[in-house]
Length: 501
Image (cartoon, rainbow, N blue to C red; front, side, top):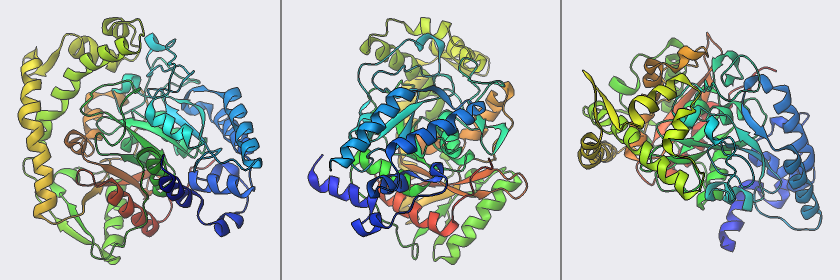
C-alpha cells in the first residue's frame, strides 16, 4: 500500500493526534465500533487484549444466537498480545491495528476451516486468506472467528440445519430471538448487532450483506461488482458475487471499504442531493413498521434539503426476472466446480450436494443446480439457453435501465426500504420460496446490474421494536459517493438503539 493511502486511512480511522489523545475508555468495551476501537487502542485507553477478551466473552454469552461457526480464541488472543506489544514498541500495522473483526464462513482465513455452512466442507482448511480478508489483516485487524450463514449462501433466513451452537436451530436476531437475522450473511449480522464484534465481512449475491444488516440494525455495503477481489470466497455466481463490509455504522463500513479498496470518504452535504423513489416496485406491500420508518426517514431527508424525485422504471421487474435466477442457478455449478478444483478440496459438486443439510438448499441443488435445470410452468427445462439469453439480453438491458434512470432523472441514487418487512419468525418455514422472493425483492435488481448498494440503520419499528434499513442504490462505480451520502444520512437519522441485553 502506498504511503499516502496509509496516511489517509489512519486519518479516517484515528482522527488527528489530538482527537486520539482525548479518547476515553467506555464503561462497556463491546459498545465501541470499529473506528472507536482503533482510536481507543491507539490512545492507550484500551488494549487489544482487553477488547478481544470482551468480545469473546460476549460471543460466549450470546451463544444462543448461533452466530458463530467457530471462535478462534487462542489465536485471536495471541494476535491481540502481539498487537499490544507492537504498539508499545511504536509499531502500528495500519488503521485497524488490534481491532477484532469477524469473517463470514465462506471467506477464506488461513488456518481456519471454511465450511460455507455445509457439512461436506467441514474439514477444508485453506492455506491462504482471501485477498479481501488479507487486506484487513494487513491493516492490523484480528479475526475473532468465522460466522454462521445460510448453507452455501443460498437463502435469506439463516436457518442452517447443519451448523448451530444451541437449540433452537437457525441464526437468531439479537432484537428478538424468535426472529431471523436475515441471510445469507446471518452470523456477521447477528454478531455485530449483539456487540460480539464491532464489524466484519459478509458476502452478497442478491442481498446477502444488506438483508441481514437491515434486519439486525447495522450498516452494510455491497460494492460495485469487481471493486473487491472474489478470490478465496466460496462462490455462487462469479458475475454476481462480492464480499461486503458490515458494521455498527456507515462510518465503520466506510473505513473497512477504504482498507480493502483504497480512498477515503467524508460526509456529503445533503442540500441539493436528488434521490429517486420508485414506489410501484420498491415500496410495494410494505409492513406497517417498515412503511412508518421509511416514510419518516424520507421526510427528514426532505427537511434536510434533499429532493425526492418520483421515478418510473417500467421494465425493472421483467428484466430482473430474466437475469436473476437464470444466471445464479446456472453459474452455481460451474463456479463451485472450479473452486473445488482450484483449492484442491478433493470433492465434486455432486459430493458436496449429497451432504447438504438444509432442506431448502438441498432441494435447490438436487433439483436445479446439479442437473443444470431451471423452473418452468410445466416442470423444469434445460438452463443453458436461458442463461445465454440472460447474459446477452436481460442483464445488459437491466444495466442500461438503471443507467438510464440515474441519467434521465438526474438522481444521485435510488432510495427505499432495504427489505419490505422487518424480520420474520425463525424456523424451517422462514426458508420458503415465498419468503426468499419477498426479502430479496428490493436488493436483487441492483445486484444483477452490478451496482453498489448501501443499507443504513433507519430506526426501530413502532409496533415490533425491530430494525428497519434504508437502502441506497447508486450508479456503477459510485461507491465512495454512496458512502458519503450514507454518512450524512446516518448523522441525520441518528443511531439505532442496540438490542437489550
